[in-house]
Length: 138
Image (cartoon, rainbow, N blue to C red):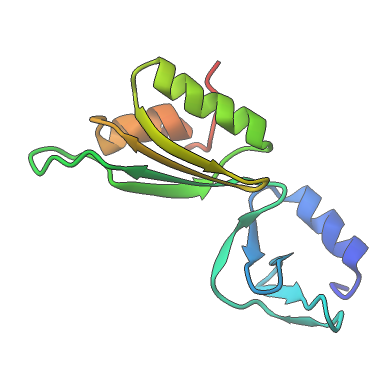
């Protein structure tokens, strides 16, 4: 059943956060992916990332404070489009949650290097909606 690319596309659209096989540049479904060269279904390789329709976001905090629970690195799936994600990053800057050092953006990946004195819990609440998934802050 997974041999058909159209079947795989339907499955991908039905689920939200999709793991992506970095070596084949294809989605992973039930631990398998389609080899683009042969068209056969094969076990997924590592490394994996998140991919379409989700954006893979990596947050790196340059602020260190051994006396508090400051977060250092966060990574996960983040929303349906890079433009909405970029608006969320800008809103976090505007509201003073982060000081931005750099942002690297591609169609399905965003790496944010910043400084933040927020604790892990605070950052998860404002950036990840308290663990309930990403939310665009408007």
